[in-house]
Length: 322
Ligand code: GLV
Image (cartoon, rainbow, N blue to C red):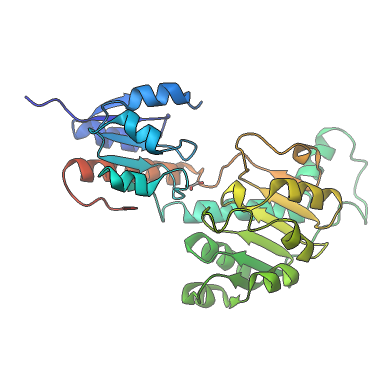
């Protein structure tokens, strides 16, 4: 009898993936907790695994791959973004890497819009006012926000999520601009969006929403000079990856009211915040909830399991990165 392949799952995940792996007879080493394991624990548990279901907060680099050793055949990232994975290092060791595209598009677009609406209409400040007993009743000039109908939405990055955000913008009566390296017919058809360069997008948009992967080229794409181009009434939304913006520069811009507000679901050093950010009333801050619906996380769970099983069975995985 052969020993079943061992798959390390580095965090508690929804059931469907576990059920699928168990049904296939895979031995699971399950880090059954919401808190991240230490790096040392992760490296120790990776040793001898054939597959790993990894979270975006874990660095899958040469050190990790070497700790896992030659038994490792596949790393399935429980995320669409894969800036945490050194894909060339995986390829060099013959390890397949996979991600979870598509299934989280709507959930992430919805969280971007949660931030847009909350920031535009001072929802969090208003909620605090009501709860704290500081609300003295309706007033004609109280917490006046940005009218979205007729305003301009600037979508930076026109992939699946950017396009879904743009489509929702049309529902709110917004004109849509987008920035991408090339024309993207999908976003133009879905939202009548017009492609412009980044400077034009920043200076013309009332809401700027980021939907780019984190790469060396997109790191600090939004920094002090870009923030200076934005309207003083504009809102910056980041549901992509924290380091796409220089968080310290955003804190400064929000303090000086150089821009009106920011809505973040992701941070440069998650879960740590740049000093000063948490004190700002004009920042809406969510704990990286983009893909966090029951349906989406269940699909992500199943998808990671299918990718693992395909590689272990010698088949092409459904969502390969290499
Ligand atoms: C979430 O941030 C993801 O990349 O899936």
